Length: 363
Image (cartoon, rainbow, N blue to C red):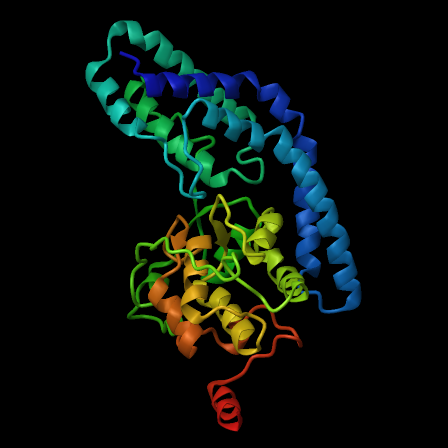
């Protein structure tokens, strides 16, 4: 028996399949955006004024073209998924398919011969859609990956061959040699899963001075408020400057990052594509340089409820560890080395523990 949630999934598949040609009208636009992103990466360090001018020029073009692409593809797909109640997007990039897994199990146990033509038809349509369209439309990587997992759990049971029918398009893990290579590939937007050499994952064979020792902890959704905002900077100029420094790490999410820095509540979680200590240390610097007005616990709560990060050895985004975040903010414990720091700029200088201690004595 085809249950309501599976019927809704089939309607969603019909929508995707019927729009293959419409979505493919954007293929040239996707190629343009990929080339622009490569161009942006070349000048993202902004070492000279020419780099800064070029970066701003390319960034403006990306934002315009990306908005068009999303309007023509991802926004429509998400809207249809919401309309059919196929998926809950309230906690992106963690998605809930509203308990369909239970109904898939029930269908496997209780299907009838009359159900088979409908199941086979929608399996064929989904495979054709995934084979003939762009994998992610530059923003749906994690959603599509989880949708593949849901549909495969259903359709694999009803396949008539030992062949992996999803092999042509499902997300595959890419072998990398180190964390740096993984981050570069992740930022390219073309890969989402990685495998690392065992020597990197074995704590007995390498030094890991900046990796948190506690596993990811559940996030307590406590929202601090200061003048009605979740986070409060010294002034608007500070927000603009730190946004300029950080936006290169949030590909296609620059507008959402700005809203977060302005203290607004987002409807999604933003992904930082590096280890958490690099990101948190920036806010420690903002705090002791007088640009950030919240207390350490408020900043910790804001980071942990607004962002996730890429952690080595994990294919999916990880929540910030509250204990580690607080230790970096409050004590500088576990902060990255000089070579690993980001947002290196004159207006936001790094200060050692001794410098900060000296400043405290002189006050």
